[in-house]
Image (cartoon, helix red, strand yellow):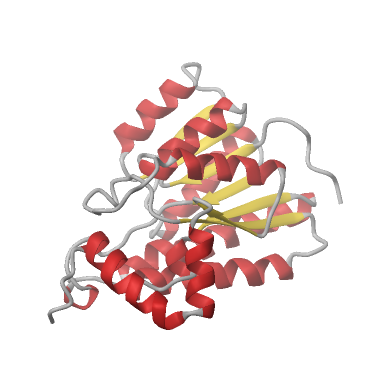
Length: 259
Protein backbone atom coordinates (compact mmCIF):
# COMPACT_ATOMS: atom_id res chain seq x y z
CA UNK A 1 0.00 0.00 0.00
CA UNK A 2 1.46 3.34 -1.06
CA UNK A 3 0.98 6.62 0.78
CA UNK A 4 -0.74 9.47 -1.04
CA UNK A 5 1.60 12.04 -2.44
CA UNK A 6 1.79 15.32 -0.61
CA UNK A 7 0.61 18.40 -2.45
CA UNK A 8 -1.92 18.77 -5.25
CA UNK A 9 -4.41 16.00 -5.87
CA UNK A 10 -6.53 15.09 -8.87
CA UNK A 11 -10.13 15.77 -7.86
CA UNK A 12 -13.32 14.93 -9.74
CA UNK A 13 -16.07 17.33 -8.66
CA UNK A 14 -19.68 16.85 -9.76
CA UNK A 15 -22.26 19.62 -9.80
CA UNK A 16 -19.45 22.11 -10.43
CA UNK A 17 -21.36 24.73 -12.41
CA UNK A 18 -23.11 26.60 -9.59
CA UNK A 19 -23.64 27.02 -5.86
CA UNK A 20 -21.58 24.80 -3.59
CA UNK A 21 -19.88 23.13 -6.55
CA UNK A 22 -18.75 26.43 -8.07
CA UNK A 23 -17.44 27.72 -4.73
CA UNK A 24 -15.70 24.40 -4.07
CA UNK A 25 -14.02 24.41 -7.47
CA UNK A 26 -12.60 27.86 -6.79
CA UNK A 27 -11.44 26.92 -3.29
CA UNK A 28 -9.76 23.71 -4.43
CA UNK A 29 -8.07 25.43 -7.36
CA UNK A 30 -6.79 28.17 -5.03
CA UNK A 31 -5.20 25.45 -2.90
CA UNK A 32 -3.35 24.08 -5.90
CA UNK A 33 -5.35 20.96 -6.68
CA UNK A 34 -5.95 19.65 -10.19
CA UNK A 35 -9.63 19.49 -11.05
CA UNK A 36 -12.07 17.67 -13.28
CA UNK A 37 -15.26 19.73 -13.35
CA UNK A 38 -18.44 17.78 -14.10
CA UNK A 39 -21.91 19.21 -14.72
CA UNK A 40 -24.58 19.21 -17.40
CA UNK A 41 -24.13 22.90 -18.23
CA UNK A 42 -21.34 22.77 -20.78
CA UNK A 43 -20.76 26.49 -21.23
CA UNK A 44 -20.65 27.22 -17.50
CA UNK A 45 -18.04 24.60 -16.64
CA UNK A 46 -15.96 25.43 -19.71
CA UNK A 47 -15.91 29.09 -18.64
CA UNK A 48 -15.06 28.10 -15.07
CA UNK A 49 -12.20 25.89 -16.26
CA UNK A 50 -10.78 28.82 -18.27
CA UNK A 51 -11.14 31.10 -15.25
CA UNK A 52 -9.32 28.71 -12.94
CA UNK A 53 -6.61 27.63 -15.40
CA UNK A 54 -6.32 29.38 -18.77
CA UNK A 55 -3.65 26.86 -19.84
CA UNK A 56 -6.11 23.95 -19.72
CA UNK A 57 -3.50 21.78 -18.03
CA UNK A 58 -4.63 21.76 -14.39
CA UNK A 59 -8.41 22.04 -14.83
CA UNK A 60 -10.52 19.90 -17.16
CA UNK A 61 -14.22 20.46 -17.88
CA UNK A 62 -16.27 17.36 -18.74
CA UNK A 63 -20.00 17.80 -19.53
CA UNK A 64 -21.69 15.09 -17.51
CA UNK A 65 -25.16 13.81 -16.71
CA UNK A 66 -24.54 11.93 -13.47
CA UNK A 67 -27.76 9.93 -13.90
CA UNK A 68 -26.51 8.37 -17.15
CA UNK A 69 -24.18 5.37 -16.97
CA UNK A 70 -22.34 6.12 -20.21
CA UNK A 71 -21.83 9.74 -19.14
CA UNK A 72 -20.44 8.67 -15.76
CA UNK A 73 -18.02 6.27 -17.42
CA UNK A 74 -16.95 8.94 -19.90
CA UNK A 75 -16.22 11.30 -16.99
CA UNK A 76 -13.97 8.79 -15.24
CA UNK A 77 -12.26 7.91 -18.53
CA UNK A 78 -11.64 11.58 -19.35
CA UNK A 79 -10.22 12.28 -15.89
CA UNK A 80 -7.95 9.24 -16.01
CA UNK A 81 -6.91 9.94 -19.58
CA UNK A 82 -5.93 13.53 -18.81
CA UNK A 83 -4.32 13.13 -15.39
CA UNK A 84 -3.48 9.42 -15.24
CA UNK A 85 -5.45 8.72 -12.06
CA UNK A 86 -8.10 10.08 -9.68
CA UNK A 87 -7.16 10.86 -6.09
CA UNK A 88 -10.46 12.31 -4.87
CA UNK A 89 -14.12 12.04 -5.87
CA UNK A 90 -16.41 14.78 -4.56
CA UNK A 91 -20.05 13.80 -5.09
CA UNK A 92 -21.71 17.19 -4.94
CA UNK A 93 -24.41 17.14 -7.65
CA UNK A 94 -27.84 17.34 -6.07
CA UNK A 95 -31.45 18.29 -6.72
CA UNK A 96 -34.68 18.62 -4.78
CA UNK A 97 -38.36 19.17 -5.52
CA UNK A 98 -38.30 22.96 -5.56
CA UNK A 99 -41.98 23.83 -5.63
CA UNK A 100 -45.01 22.21 -4.05
CA UNK A 101 -45.20 18.86 -2.36
CA UNK A 102 -43.00 16.08 -3.66
CA UNK A 103 -45.95 13.74 -4.20
CA UNK A 104 -47.43 16.21 -6.70
CA UNK A 105 -44.21 16.38 -8.72
CA UNK A 106 -44.14 14.64 -12.11
CA UNK A 107 -40.87 12.82 -11.40
CA UNK A 108 -39.94 12.94 -7.71
CA UNK A 109 -37.67 9.90 -7.98
CA UNK A 110 -35.14 11.96 -9.94
CA UNK A 111 -34.07 13.21 -6.50
CA UNK A 112 -32.99 9.68 -5.59
CA UNK A 113 -31.32 9.14 -8.95
CA UNK A 114 -29.18 12.27 -8.70
CA UNK A 115 -28.55 12.43 -4.95
CA UNK A 116 -28.09 8.74 -4.12
CA UNK A 117 -27.85 6.43 -7.10
CA UNK A 118 -25.34 8.57 -9.01
CA UNK A 119 -22.84 8.87 -6.12
CA UNK A 120 -23.02 5.11 -5.51
CA UNK A 121 -22.35 4.36 -9.17
CA UNK A 122 -19.50 6.87 -9.40
CA UNK A 123 -17.89 5.36 -6.31
CA UNK A 124 -18.13 1.95 -7.96
CA UNK A 125 -16.23 3.30 -10.96
CA UNK A 126 -13.36 4.98 -9.09
CA UNK A 127 -12.97 2.63 -6.15
CA UNK A 128 -11.10 -0.28 -7.81
CA UNK A 129 -8.22 1.96 -8.91
CA UNK A 130 -8.10 3.73 -5.54
CA UNK A 131 -7.91 0.42 -3.70
CA UNK A 132 -5.26 -0.88 -6.08
CA UNK A 133 -3.14 2.26 -5.52
CA UNK A 134 -3.68 2.07 -1.76
CA UNK A 135 -5.05 5.56 -1.33
CA UNK A 136 -7.90 7.83 -2.31
CA UNK A 137 -10.66 9.90 -0.80
CA UNK A 138 -14.43 9.89 -1.35
CA UNK A 139 -16.20 13.05 -0.17
CA UNK A 140 -19.98 12.92 -0.30
CA UNK A 141 -21.95 16.14 0.08
CA UNK A 142 -24.95 15.11 2.14
CA UNK A 143 -27.11 17.59 4.09
CA UNK A 144 -28.38 18.44 7.54
CA UNK A 145 -31.67 17.24 5.98
CA UNK A 146 -30.05 13.79 6.07
CA UNK A 147 -29.83 14.11 9.86
CA UNK A 148 -32.96 16.15 10.59
CA UNK A 149 -35.70 15.13 8.15
CA UNK A 150 -37.44 18.04 6.44
CA UNK A 151 -38.59 16.81 3.03
CA UNK A 152 -39.62 13.24 2.21
CA UNK A 153 -37.67 12.58 -0.98
CA UNK A 154 -34.75 14.95 -0.39
CA UNK A 155 -34.23 13.72 3.15
CA UNK A 156 -34.54 10.11 1.97
CA UNK A 157 -31.78 10.71 -0.56
CA UNK A 158 -29.48 12.38 1.97
CA UNK A 159 -30.19 9.89 4.78
CA UNK A 160 -29.34 7.22 2.22
CA UNK A 161 -26.16 8.96 1.15
CA UNK A 162 -25.06 9.33 4.78
CA UNK A 163 -25.79 5.67 5.50
CA UNK A 164 -23.94 4.61 2.38
CA UNK A 165 -20.96 6.81 3.28
CA UNK A 166 -20.76 5.67 6.90
CA UNK A 167 -20.96 2.02 5.89
CA UNK A 168 -18.48 2.45 3.05
CA UNK A 169 -16.01 4.13 5.38
CA UNK A 170 -16.01 1.08 7.64
CA UNK A 171 -15.79 -1.32 4.69
CA UNK A 172 -12.65 0.51 3.55
CA UNK A 173 -10.85 0.79 6.90
CA UNK A 174 -7.25 -0.27 6.43
CA UNK A 175 -7.29 0.11 2.64
CA UNK A 176 -5.91 3.64 2.52
CA UNK A 177 -9.13 4.98 1.00
CA UNK A 178 -10.84 7.63 3.13
CA UNK A 179 -14.56 8.43 3.16
CA UNK A 180 -15.89 11.73 4.47
CA UNK A 181 -19.32 13.36 4.63
CA UNK A 182 -19.87 17.10 4.47
CA UNK A 183 -23.41 17.93 5.62
CA UNK A 184 -24.39 21.54 4.88
CA UNK A 185 -27.32 23.36 6.37
CA UNK A 186 -28.95 26.12 4.35
CA UNK A 187 -26.47 28.12 2.27
CA UNK A 188 -27.10 30.51 -0.60
CA UNK A 189 -27.41 28.68 -3.91
CA UNK A 190 -29.77 28.22 -6.83
CA UNK A 191 -31.47 25.44 -4.87
CA UNK A 192 -32.26 27.73 -1.93
CA UNK A 193 -32.97 30.93 -3.90
CA UNK A 194 -36.61 31.07 -2.74
CA UNK A 195 -35.90 30.28 0.92
CA UNK A 196 -36.79 32.99 3.44
CA UNK A 197 -34.00 32.02 5.83
CA UNK A 198 -30.72 33.62 6.93
CA UNK A 199 -27.97 31.84 5.03
CA UNK A 200 -24.21 32.16 4.59
CA UNK A 201 -22.63 31.80 1.18
CA UNK A 202 -21.53 28.44 -0.24
CA UNK A 203 -17.91 29.29 0.52
CA UNK A 204 -18.35 27.91 4.05
CA UNK A 205 -19.03 24.48 2.54
CA UNK A 206 -16.20 24.83 0.03
CA UNK A 207 -13.72 25.45 2.81
CA UNK A 208 -15.03 22.42 4.71
CA UNK A 209 -14.52 20.20 1.66
CA UNK A 210 -10.98 21.47 1.11
CA UNK A 211 -10.12 21.14 4.80
CA UNK A 212 -11.37 17.56 5.05
CA UNK A 213 -8.93 16.53 2.33
CA UNK A 214 -5.96 17.62 4.44
CA UNK A 215 -7.50 16.47 7.72
CA UNK A 216 -9.88 13.58 7.00
CA UNK A 217 -12.95 13.39 9.22
CA UNK A 218 -15.98 11.13 9.23
CA UNK A 219 -18.52 13.97 8.99
CA UNK A 220 -18.48 17.74 9.10
CA UNK A 221 -21.66 19.78 9.65
CA UNK A 222 -21.57 23.35 8.32
CA UNK A 223 -22.39 25.97 9.37
CA UNK A 224 -21.50 24.72 12.85
CA UNK A 225 -24.72 26.08 14.37
CA UNK A 226 -26.67 23.27 12.70
CA UNK A 227 -25.10 20.82 15.14
CA UNK A 228 -27.53 22.22 17.71
CA UNK A 229 -30.47 21.36 15.46
CA UNK A 230 -29.16 17.82 15.07
CA UNK A 231 -28.86 17.50 18.86
CA UNK A 232 -32.38 18.90 19.33
CA UNK A 233 -33.86 16.46 16.82
CA UNK A 234 -32.21 13.53 18.59
CA UNK A 235 -33.02 14.49 22.18
CA UNK A 236 -36.16 16.67 21.95
CA UNK A 237 -37.98 15.46 18.84
CA UNK A 238 -41.31 17.09 19.69
CA UNK A 239 -39.68 20.51 19.92
CA UNK A 240 -37.79 19.78 16.73
CA UNK A 241 -41.11 18.94 15.02
CA UNK A 242 -42.39 22.40 15.82
CA UNK A 243 -39.22 24.17 14.76
CA UNK A 244 -38.84 22.29 11.49
CA UNK A 245 -42.51 22.55 10.58
CA UNK A 246 -42.98 26.23 11.40
CA UNK A 247 -39.64 27.56 10.27
CA UNK A 248 -37.80 25.26 7.89
CA UNK A 249 -40.63 23.76 5.84
CA UNK A 250 -42.62 26.96 5.48
CA UNK A 251 -39.69 29.29 4.84
CA UNK A 252 -37.69 26.91 2.66
CA UNK A 253 -40.44 25.38 0.56
CA UNK A 254 -43.24 27.88 1.07
CA UNK A 255 -45.69 25.23 2.27
CA UNK A 256 -48.54 26.49 4.41
CA UNK A 257 -49.37 22.98 5.70
CA UNK A 258 -52.86 23.16 4.17
CA UNK A 259 -53.26 20.00 2.13
